[in-house]
Image (cartoon, rainbow, N blue to C red):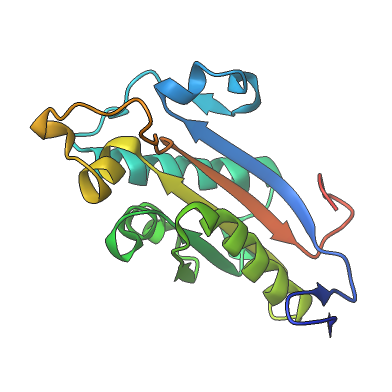
Length: 183
């Protein structure tokens, strides 16, 4: 790796993305990108009792889908860089703990996924890893409860208010160029 300035790194060997996966909520599945998601949910709870448990399930299933699609075993994944919008990255840490992959919880709000991809690339570029999962999740209802107006209060949302996505995305970043879907 070569440092080409304060914000640019040139990798000696290209870093690849082996596979990706995404799951989104009902609102996102109504949009123009619906055909590009792996799974679109009909229910905000996805069979769980709380929004937070639903978010953990969404990121868990998204990451598992990436692993299955990549045809790698869990043992071939060196690290997992993942995060969400809740305190202590609770949704991602609880959702991914059963995988047994060393977990780095990251928080960058809207930039979490790009931060995960960047960190994974640097680890692979340095020779510290061969395959890393980069993932993120959010859930409109749990984020609204934590950062804005709890839905249970029945507050009216102004027309200009933002809407946090319900969904998760994951990618397997790898040094393996032969099987890459993105180089």
